Image 1: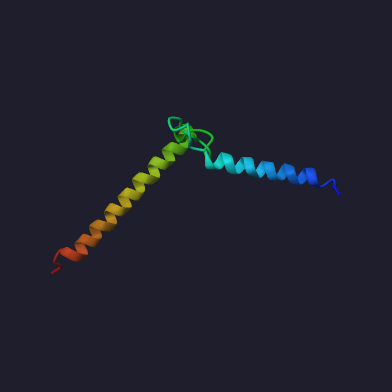
Image 2: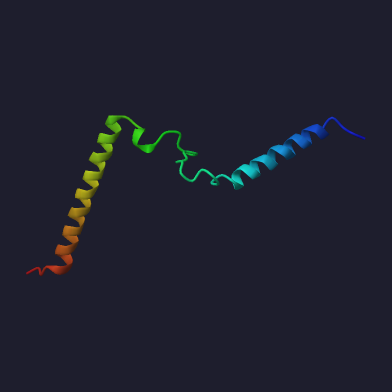
Length: 82
């Protein structure tokens, strides 16, 4: 006895079979191409100029804070205090 649900089961089976085949063979034959499966655009083109400026400013402030921290640590550890 065939039910109306049988064609749907076959459809789901073939869809999962195809997806497993595609994921297993994702890197074959396309080794030269750069894939953006997660990111739709290359990272260099993402964002606005203000975001880039803010990022550079944050990096510079972080580097300055780390330098200050290490300078204090070196002074406390290696320089004699009278």
